[in-house]
Length: 95
Image (tube, rainbow, N blue to C red; front, side, top):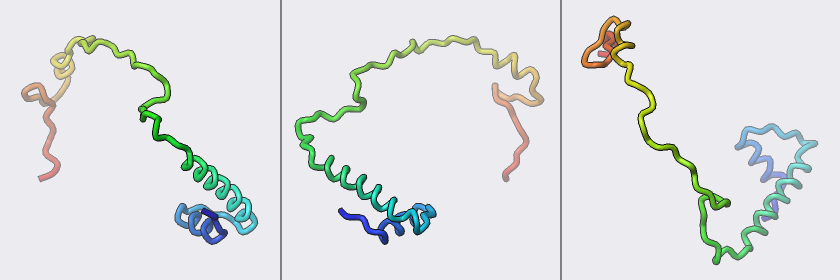
């Protein structure tokens, strides 16, 4: 795919980028090289490649799922003006 000045101007407009007329030729060339490289990558045969989630064969070290802190809810709720069934109660704002 060959990019033109009009293509790049339209892309810049859609991306809300301001590219001046003096910069446009350079941007067309650079974006054209990127598109050519992507086209080159599309030609690579990947039929024998197994899809993977991560390029490195690693496993994540997980910690044990255990409680590490004591429950202090009752202590904290002693300072509250209104508590019901272990929950803070507040005035109704929306009817």
